[in-house]
Image (cartoon, rainbow, N blue to C red; front, side, top):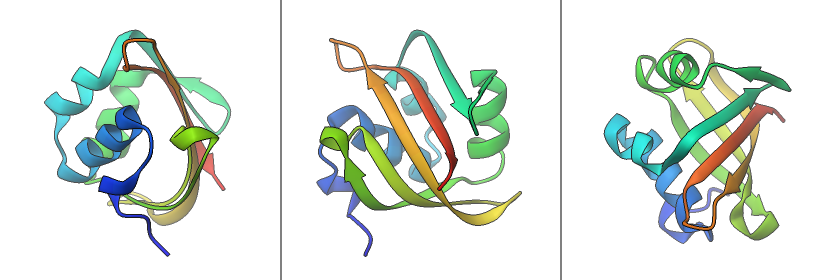
Length: 108
């Protein structure tokens, strides 16, 4: 069963999912702390390149099925125009001022 985005526990993660699903690049970028990093499948990736290829140019969309770690870990069905839909896991590191300094994703 999908968790409504508005009900996600962590405000930064909730804003991340909202921005992805709205294809709101500007809003997404404002969520990231300076120097933010990310990994996909256990390998560090170039953040700007990855979000362009996996989210914005390919219409990425997340349906969250489960959250844990106070809302900073998600299991979601993620889909985009390149890969179709897959079960994915997401984890987020949030700074004291509520911005995302790192996120990691991969197949679940």
